[in-house]
Length: 173
Ligand SMILES: [Zn+2]
Image 1 (tube, protein in one colour):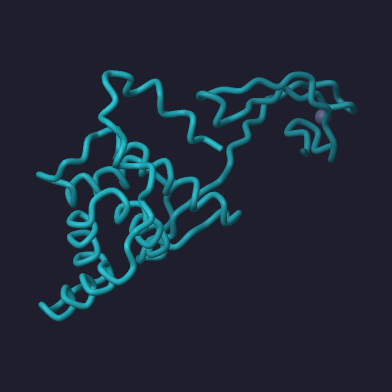
Image 2 (image 1 turned 90 degrees about the vertical axis):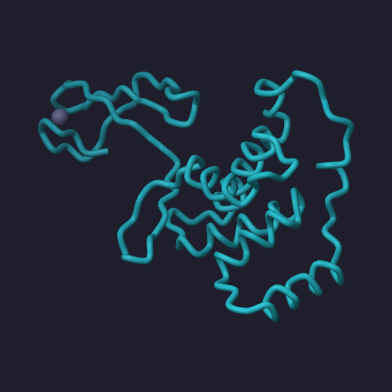
């Protein structure tokens, strides 16, 4: 990292500490030439390229807003949605790319949403994939019937009592 004071092309890390729940790391650096200290911050990039060409940071909140709408009136609780958004982020990050087309986000939502609730999936797919006719729905439903989702563990478990928000981390890796 170039020193911002004297432009020397090297600097030494003197301290590192995680910030923002560990999703960012801040480093204190020192220039071996002029001795000045400065800070840098490191984040794992995940930017979404919108249809307009503009980019914005990936937002779980935006995924949540989209799927929440599709799940209205369905037996899906907020924890399921939070978990889904987390899975979507993991899927996208596992591509190793720093920038991802908005389209890919939609695709990454479809599979876990289908496991969660097939009706919500159909609603989401109808908007996302521009279903224009009954035939489009029929085709998709035929696909759903032909290829049952492998939702083995997710939904069939007995409703866990009130362990909600803190118990989510186990799926992290
Ligand atoms: Zn310097």
